[in-house]
Length: 387
Picture 1 (cartoon, rainbow, N blue to C red):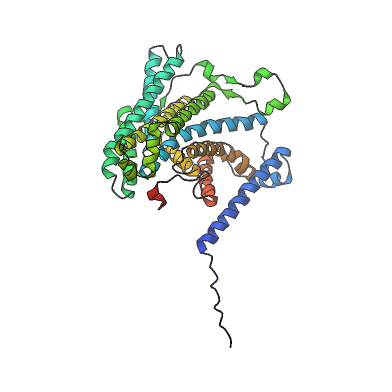
Picture 2 (cartoon, rainbow, N blue to C red):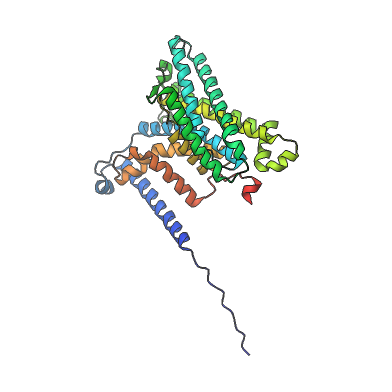
């Protein structure tokens, strides 16, 4: 008597999975080849690989490398501050507020107007610390009010609608704010007043230790403006972390992000917490707006568009809904955007690699999602989103 053995079906690999595997391998090979070519180029600029791919290749000096790193880190912290707003709103309402970049732009514009008034009054140069505090308060207040009004007028009536509707609405709000600023202030580029000489001066934090060869690797030439960006961004994030993690209001925000209905049954005013979330995210965007204006000085009514998209990318890279991940994603994205063109693209023979920084930023998003779809630090989703 024979027993028929039923063969188990062999699972088929979907075409999409094969394509994603191919992309992963291709990305690893491309990045690995670029880094290998860069290291060999540093050792010998006239090596056979460089001669074949890019005869004009030149090695980076240590100072150039550190300069790119400092520029990337400072820009990344600004991306991170904007990304926090995306993550906070997504954590509470479960949709991406694409108008958040315009909240950042409004803060930068209000800071410019205030700085012009202070400059005309002769306070800007003579009492810069006071001027800085004033424009920071004005920018944070303006951005906070913009975000709160946006939530009350545009998003609250749509809270029970399908998520696609608030998403489309946020794009409309973005264009509305852009054109409102265009109508009020005109299309011309706005330039912040000249900063005091102390902020333009390049400093070496470890310079007091003298010329010690080992320390030269860690002694960075940092301008006063960049140092201000690091300090203000760090303090702002620390205050936000304390608010969210160590206060009663922060616990209420986390409860609403987890489950709005249960939070309401526990006596939490959900509407108030949502407004507060928009307000806090707007305040962080206002800080970033001032930092952006003082660093690059020139702004327009569309200044918020590309940094806003980059910040959204940073939020996804770090993990949507994860505040620490948003800041880390912003810092990482800014660093990659600054360094990858000259460390990967230029050794591979790509012409004008610095013009491809935007491409590098979004390619970094693709690479992260290929290997970790939930972001580097994982998503923090509500109970509804997890189901």
